[in-house]
Image (spheres, one colour):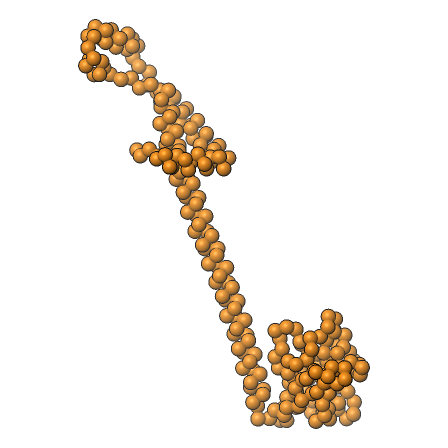
Amino acid sequence: MRISSPEETQIVEEALKQFSELKQELEDIELSLEEYAQANAIEPPSGAKEKIMTRIFANGAKEENKNAPVIPINKKTPMFYKWIAAASIILLIGSIIVNYNYYEKYHNTQQELQVAQQKIEQQQRSNLAMSQDMDIVTNKYAQPVLLKGTPKAPDAVAKIFWMKNTGDVYINPTNLPQAPVGKQYQLWAIVDGKPVDGGMIVTEKGTYHIQKMKSFGKAQAFAITLEKEGGSPTPTMSEMVVIAKM
């Protein structure tokens, strides 16, 4: 059986210092092996010692002494088993390290795969939204209406696409200012001289795509106001940000 090298022995000693579980395991192995050795030890025949000593002194020859039978001494046996235990600990440590490395690589690979899938899904959603936007903009029935800023928000701009064949209304809120916390933009259509709710506009970051609003058979004008989140039954005129006539 191969005995561990000094380098391997040092690895074991360092591991025993760092991990109390390994030290306890080694002590348990040593104790079990020592108990096994003692339980299976062979006692020398009675009078063997006297016979050996008589033979040594009778011959007085060094050559005879070399050829004398050697009786194993049980006290050295546990040291041999300690090396076996040390080799077992080395294998255990190696197994732990290998398993840990494989787990880390598998875990990291799974995380990278999940991130990549999320990016692909996000890009697919973005591509789909852009494709839908282009379908609306290039629709032959789409009548674009530009809503310009009011004194409340002079730099604000929005664009409506009113479908002449269906009366459907779409809005591009890209150039509206970010709505304050607790506030939300609301579209209004002026129908027969009265404001009619056209729906709430989504302006959260990353969702500035063309959105479908409520449909109107005919409208004389469109306006957008800044209302409390969730909308209002009537427009707050002081909070009107953009307006346009048809």
